[in-house]
Image 1 (cartoon, helix red, strand yellow):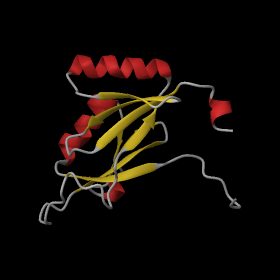
Image 2: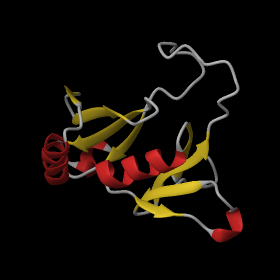
Image 3: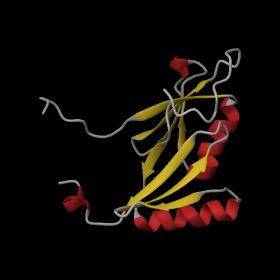
Image 4: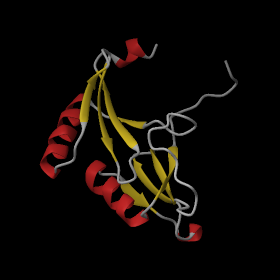
Length: 136
């Protein structure tokens, strides 16, 4: 136990090939809101839902590319929690806009996974059981 409490995951920082394309994707596909403070310059661009989300930075395209199938020292995926109602709405939205996704049943959770323009795996997840019981 620590002498402090963590409230929630604030953000995950990702690097992308095309800032504009990624900002548009996260806005149009997931409905995240863009926050870009003038004092920061061109980046990071924050894409948020409520108080959590992503900090988007440009990738250094001069570096040797990583093996995209590697499961070493990189983010595997990141997840946004949604209500069961919004989980259903998200699936319908993705179908309407032609965004591919996969569904997984994790017993206590249902999840859908999709890929952003830079091939990051993005998860939307919803809890199927009572929150107070599960997180006790």
